[in-house]
Length: 282
Image 1 (cartoon, rainbow, N blue to C red):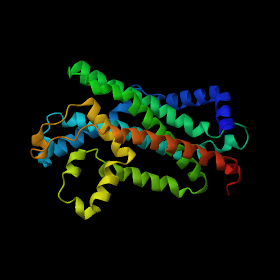
Image 2 (spheres, one colour):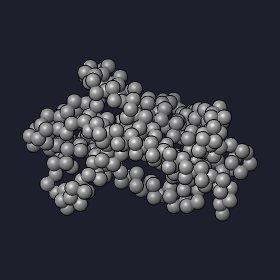
Image 3 (cartoon, rainbow, N blue to C red):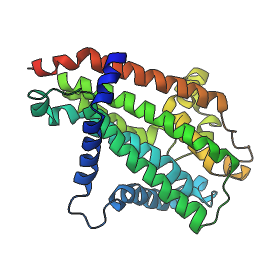
Image 4 (spheres, one colour):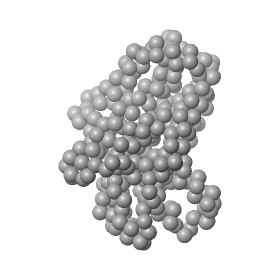
């Protein structure tokens, strides 16, 4: 793996050019440019907030429900778009890799990095709105943000490498991934808070304590919940029928960091174990 990383570093100029190309192509002939990256999650927030405010008691009890929703949708959008883009990245460049030598991994890496740029810009827009325009206090826990962002980058990059490689040999993968990511908006605590699951009296029907632990401590849930806990003040206990909001799960976030690093290493190792078979695909 050390040799493979050295090859990537040797071709870092090409990697940077691919990242720039991905960013330029996305905004080519567009008047609004970067705003098209932040517009979809903002529109999702507006529609979901409108629906939930009028359809559920929970959302109406949280004055800043749209902020809780946006803080979850920004990282989810990054994961969703980066993985979907990477899933087809090798096949889109298939004609090139058959004719020119280059480390194959820089192709999905360029997708992960270009989407990471949009991810950072989305957080910048959130910061301007939340702290600049609304004047909300910057919490001490915001110092966790660089860690959360790094952990998510490792997780997304590892998944992207694995999916990009797998889709070369089994093109059904892109459809499976698309379905899973579409359902993830409802499965993970994005439109609702983790406390609603934790305090639910129906949890025994879905695997009891084991199911609850798997749900609450998977990397995606930990990251989404972590962003909310470090950026936003906890909702009033009345939102959870008088029970307190759950605290920041520091051990869980540290464990998520380890898991995300292992996902990155395993995804990279799997990609490298099969990348020279790409040109032999039927």
